[in-house]
Image 1 (cartoon, rainbow, N blue to C red):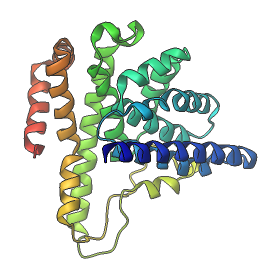
Image 2 (image 1 turned 90 degrees about the vertical axis):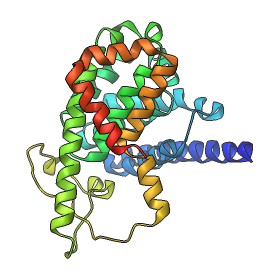
Image 3 (image 1 turned 180 degrees about the vertical axis):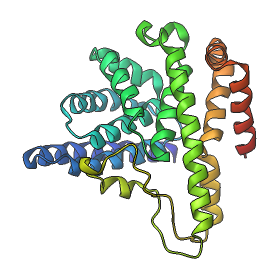
Image 4 (image 1 turned 90 degrees about the horizontal axis):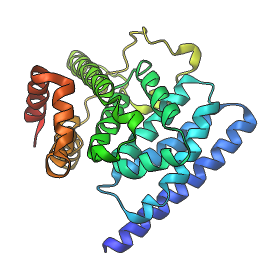
Length: 276
């Protein structure tokens, strides 16, 4: 039943969060943040599986974001900060209203959004761009009057960053497709989050063109294809815009104003080409 599934999801998320806190404690004792990534990945995966906000899960969000913000303040490794912002991004995608209220409650709007913008400049992988695009765009699912002034005054700037990420995401996706086609008869490594775990800060270089995009061409099942279609970035963007049209149409005007007619046409074209 739905109630049973909700309880199971809430239990798994709560368990993952406690596991993450334990890992944080152990990694701090070892002075190595790399162990914390596995806990974050668990929580990210749970949030990304949630189809819509659930009351019991919403109750976990404030303490989770408060904890993550404290981690951001003292984090020393850029890779770790990147992963922390992926978690913030998926929480915003899950429920932007609860996420925004939670950040406001700990007076951390400035640090969250300033460092989030900084983190964009260090992104290297398509899944990073995808999560941040959806997380930041989900802010527009909040009624304009309910968005904190410090954020609403900078919406055009944030939307310009979203567009930049969309362009970079498309470039990475194209490179990945071309690399896959070029190497279809060879073995390779996928652009996965496991690669992310192996990156030390010494190796972290935004100008590094090392190819992480090749993978062995395994057969894709119909279930996997359906999942890939439903989680396609532009299908999800289309869903956000559809929500805005239904519940906060004034935010569509904000999006139109920030992007301009040409970019909006390009965006709708991307959505149209990727809609199921």
